[in-house]
Image (cartoon, rainbow, N blue to C red; front, side):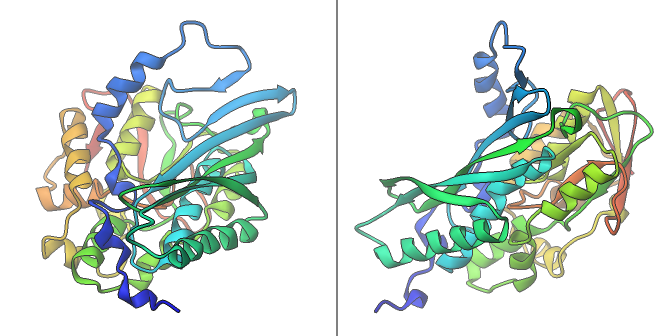
Length: 331
């Protein structure tokens, strides 16, 4: 029998969670070369705006949502890592108004360094999340990898008439956020110290299923989820794609308990700094200082939904207005 406490998974990877994404500006430059000259009429959502998943219409009342997400460990516990990664992967389907049907595992594992039993715990965590979401988990693919990585490729279904997408924002709509920020800084603190934020784990393992269904019930059309590009990065993409300016009331943005304290102590993921650098040329920061901007750009893992509209229980953190000189305005 192995003792999982003997292995701190975060120490076997250079980064953690969605904070280890390729920087957004660099990624966009690469993906822009893959834009099809004449996309098929049945491809409702492709790569044009960096939406949460691809959507293909298969009948007048049904479309298929396809997405994939994987990353390096964001926590030391293998089972919890599996739960977080699976919750994050399923989020893209909920962010588009869909329901997940089936997922397959994506696993990279340093088999000469970490025991296979730990990989089994990661997969068990993903399976349990799939069961909780009424989503089949069926097989997948694994490789021998210098760093541990896990995630899922997920297929879901959505009604084309109620599709939630990133480019459907309109002036006058409020902005709601369904989970607090601060996951990135708390995960950086965990990686550096071994201390655990149970509040952060609770946020990362909460499915966005209820929030997605609430958005549909409210007749909302514009949603994205907040992951590695942070609130500012994902909101910038939404506002740019929708041709509007997004105004954030920074005092209304909720944070996980302890996030501000660890940020002030210097536990900032590199991804958060890259996010802020990317949006800064398009942002009017007002009188908000650099530390607050970095928290707004904090790279989230399995974050909440950003909704152009109001949802029960979700704080309103800003609004969309007609396009001005800046894409993002912070007040």
